[in-house]
Amino acid sequence: MASKISLVKYTNSPDSLKTGIALCDGFKDLKQTDSVLIKPNLVAWDDRFPIAPFGVYTTTRLVEDLIILLKDFGCSRIMIGEGSVQFKKTVGTHQAYEGLGYQQLEKRYGVELVDFNQSKALEFIYHDGQVLHIASEAVETDFFINFPVLKTHGQTKVSLGLKNLKGCLKLSSKRHCHHPESGLEFSFSHIADFVQPKLTIVDGIYALEKGALHFGNAYRKEVIIASTDILGADLAAAQTIGYGSEDIAHFQHYAKRHGKSLSLADYEITGEALSDHVKPLKWDWTWTKDNTGPGIFEKLGVTGVALPKYDETLCSGCSPIANMSNILALSAFKGQPLPKVEILNGKKMKGRPGYDKTVLLGNCIIKANEDNPDITGAIPVKGCPPSESDVTEALKSVGLDVNILAYHGYMKQQSEKYNGKDGYDSGLYRA
Image (tube, one colour):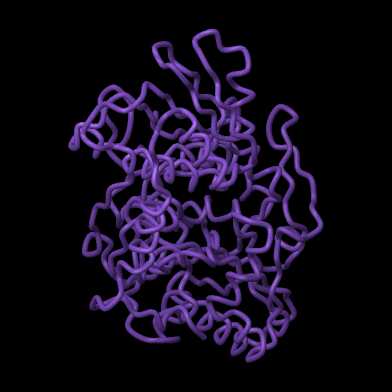
């Protein structure tokens, strides 16, 4: 029998979600006595430059709707679990819970909030002896509900159900997924083998283009996609933003291991016609032809400095540092060629010949270039991730007259970019 995928238009709470779950028989294997774990997408929290929530975080209103439906079903043991990226030690999952209203849900409905970063880990071998450490609650719960957001992603093209499970990993395993030999999409596609979600619900109230924390652009889409089949949910969700199975490597990895079809024709789609809800979104940022910086460098005539395009080995913790470097390099440009400096990040980039200095951002890229004969003068910036101040000082030391206030201004603008715009309802992110 073909797996069911429901696609409904979000019109009100909690009825829209109730319809979506019913149309895919989402609770068919649920028992009132089950322990239930809801895994939203609360990717990271920033207490200095708040991330505009639209299309980035699972909407709190939908999470509350799900809790109401579970309570109505008779479930009493409900947890919400996430392992948010920590840009600094004092800001993580619990700050995201607080900022998005989850503590009110805890008080109102008696649910338990779990920080996977603090959980006991269970070890799973997935390929050639490689290991994933997964938070125990994610594996041991009776009924796991995966609740991602509809978004594109600069490394994996889409970030949906399969990728949302990366938040169940302990930090060492999150970093391991970015290993240059294992490959990001191959590695995280295995998490579902061990967590095994019973229901995946894709929150498409907003869809995020070029999705990454502060920097994507969200569009009001107002759809909910649900299935007891995680691949089916991801295939349908990806199609609504313009991506087929042939575009997404982690879909292919998962389907091959499980002998599953990558064709939506082999699934039963219920509710709205999928074709009525397709709006292609871009996933990637443009880069210069010689890979020396983002496309705006070419438009403005920035030369001399080189910031090669990030790759899949760049971890979430270091990704803000990579973007900061782009903004800082732009702040140093005054219409004349900048110093011949190359700035690298991630785990596998190699410094190229022809540069007077090579700035290495983070412990991983320092290690990857420790014996690189093409580097004339290495400037290592240690850290995992390195600090903003250390990066700024390193760039100044190689002759780039950077202005950190330009970066702060850019981040403030990103935080406030939806303020006052029609359709962007911040109330969806409060309980």
